[in-house]
Length: 284
Ligand code: FES
Image (cartoon, rainbow, N blue to C red; front, side, top):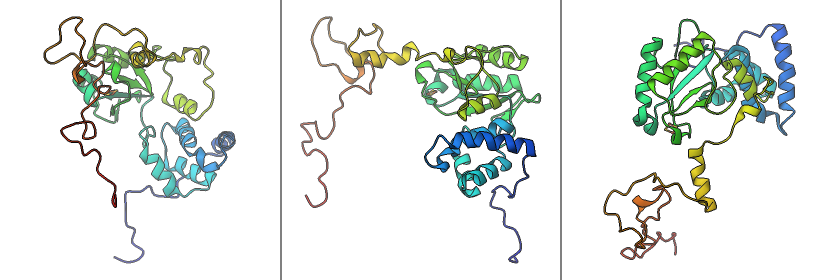
């Protein structure tokens, strides 16, 4: 191999084509506004990546070159960030990013069935877009909404407690251009519009801010516990073995706690059978 032969490492080929002059002028003005919010310009990289997504619907090579030049970073630094976070798309995709959580809890609660149904209904696979350019379907990892499993997200808005039927209706509504409201928050807007909001620009749709909603009831159970408020009668984790008689005081076993994470666990430090406690530091 000669010194002039190119070695492809799977990285974007730079330099990228330039934005048209009018687009560049608009992005320059928006970027200036974003950068002014931070003490150091490089801290504006995440919102600027959203900004370039709002232009093309994904982070193109041109978008990455724009971010690098504007923030005085290398394209390698920008690429490293853009490829790390799953909220940045690397290729042209649909107006609606439909993510089905197929992480463990959602999967067993029906997420796998929802994904399979949508795959067949839309005729696309994971990370593929329908021919009309409307919907991109993808598996997503846990979105910290396990208390509403199985969840589907559209452009990062939650649709709780979904079923194959409700998710099918959801994508049909999106494709038909009908107004779609998430479980919490304002009606769904396009991916580009969402990206501009994520870049930090105001959501100017009437009623959108007021519709941002609050936490769902299931999410507030832990807060009620912490405040000592009345507990719901139903237990999240049912006892798996002998339950003490009604009214008889006892130390609750881990399986009787509302959440097994809250239960006191026998550790080496607390277990009288193993009194050594934590391992000593070196030299003690
Ligand atoms: S497993 Fe789906 S939101 Fe946590």
